[in-house]
Length: 384
Image 1 (cartoon, helix red, strand yellow):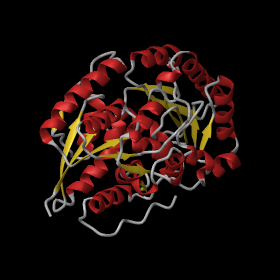
Image 2 (spheres, rainbow, N blue to C red; image 1 turned 135 degrees about the vertical axis):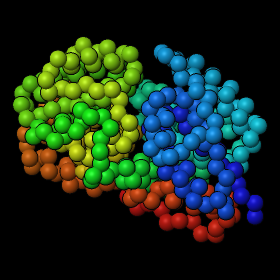
Image 3 (cartoon, rainbow, N blue to C red; image 1 turned 180 degrees about the vertical axis):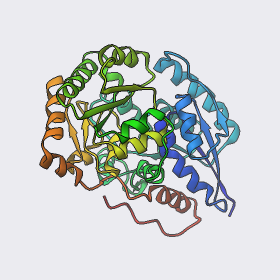
């Protein structure tokens, strides 16, 4: 049987970190697959840092990112660029990931060219189309055109079944983010960002913070920053490390509200290995991120989620994540409690990881092998 051509499309750093383990696994089976990596450049420097970490060179880079790009600009440019590549290459299947504009465009272009789609991280839902925005709608649109729905957990599968997707097209694989985090965290890791070395070696409790979501621009983000500054003022043994997103909107507000405090350290975005190893060495995390909800559970670090909704309820259900909302008072209160109540903190650190066991990429590649007839038996599903 002839090997099959798999085109893997992604464009942001989070996609790269979650897709690179799958690409590596595809490359372990040259008898089955010929893989081609196409990146849109939805992120620029951050994307290529992650590719370099996993020793993966893209076969095609559309390099579409520009300053202050709009969703309309990027979407139209990515669809046009990807359509040319897909029409010329004619892969046997296209893999996309998650809920980004790149995932949306890759799924639509595959559909336009009548090429099967595999959607990694399918089925996540917040049930609010504006939160996360535009990701909630992107993910649902991609699922509509998908042939192989790789749901990380049973909750994702249940969401898809309720929406009418056929069960034999849905596979529970676990999260490839867990695969990547396990591979990347090292006890003897040497940080590339030199300021992290002294900060982590200090006697302070490290709180790592991220904030970047579009729906949190304005008052919600002001609330986050006010809460964390208040916490640090009251907790002399706490230092905050905040790798500030490259968004001009985020950076302007972050430096306005948080700079000048000796224990709040505003850094440029970290490369993926630095970030993972920082998370594993932190006391707790504050974030509005999607992916960090998965990565922090790998290291049993409590996460205060500064959002009003989440498409990853599994972590809340096992008490690994606390959904704090975006009001200053709620963020302040739960963070202060975690820093002051050791029993409450310990309960969150004992939560099991509901997202994966480090084998998601292998499951996905074996499901692809089964789909194309290379193997006769499907791999066992992930039991979260």
